[in-house]
Length: 38
Image (cartoon, rainbow, N blue to C red; front, side, top):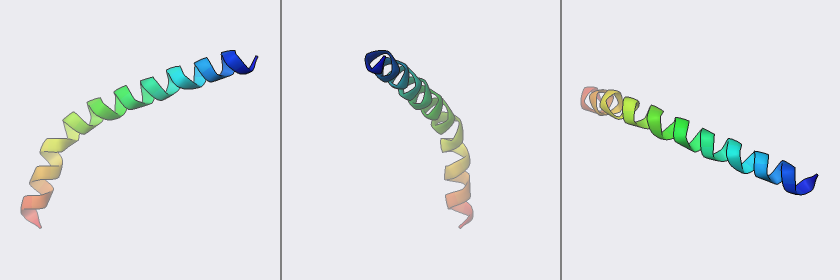
């Protein structure tokens, strides 16, 4: 049970990181624009 739970958590972590990376790539342009405005 514990092993299975850990594997699921690892999968979720990987998915989260992948989503974050995709969002970061989308947001980098927006962040650069915001920094220029400041």
